[in-house]
View 1 (cartoon, rainbow, N blue to C red):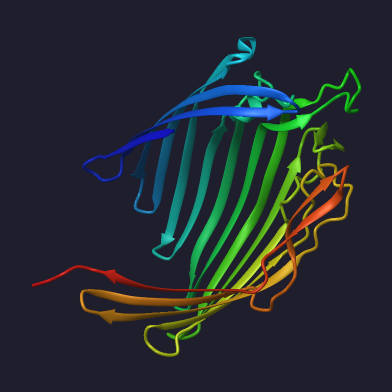
View 2 (view 1 turned 90 degrees about the vertical axis):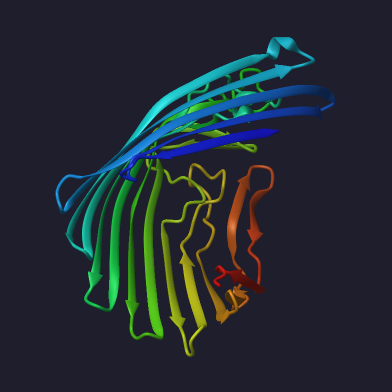
Length: 361
């Protein structure tokens, strides 16, 4: 069961935003694991309060700021073994702020700072499979971003952003004695001190005519462990050094999209996306061959026609237009080696809709 309530209040300036959220989760579980029955219940109360405001310091400089308070209370009840009962309570205040300097109506430079907060999940703290750790700390993040947005004459726009997010206490299944069956085996969920994501993203959009435009986007992401540790997942034990890449995060992504409108209401689009190599899930030590990079081409046709009191819309989308075989997900295990999940082949979707836009006398 989940109950949620959220409210927002705008000031007379329509700039100040005040709000709150409340969520209640209740979950009961009946299980049979290795012949051992289980009957547990879990409950969670989540409360958040937040405020955000924007100020015009000068005609060119804008300051924005916000603050959020999170309170999360989690309870676990083992109806067959009450000695396992436990509860945890987490709370944290996270700020965010930003500065934007506008050189002119079409060019601006901005800087932003934000902090993040994630509580351990119920399954990470309370489970009957031996990985639980009721003493886990919440995951915290601190991020910075600097960006530039600018018009390119009358024919396009360009954006560039550079960012870094430092994460503390990410949660992984780690061990110091990692041999399964060894009486001293001590594998369970632990907090890893430091990890980091950083990179940049560039976007250029060019309109060659009223009928034809092209968009280009490139992003580079470096996701790394910054603390040496030993991680065990699914039978796989990996010694992780500071600087090893976090699995399933490709460093390079490139996409190009072209739109052409031969007649009013009709738009034909063609988009290509390239994703570079990435490490398999569980290959935290980066010791295995990577998932190969891939390129996918997609097409779309959309048509809009004005009608009585609204608009008629139709679309046809073709994903993986070249029916290319590729893999977007892979997992490594000591028991079965490298395993990949094939991505869907060519797929066609279509739809029709009518959007009512109001009635007049």
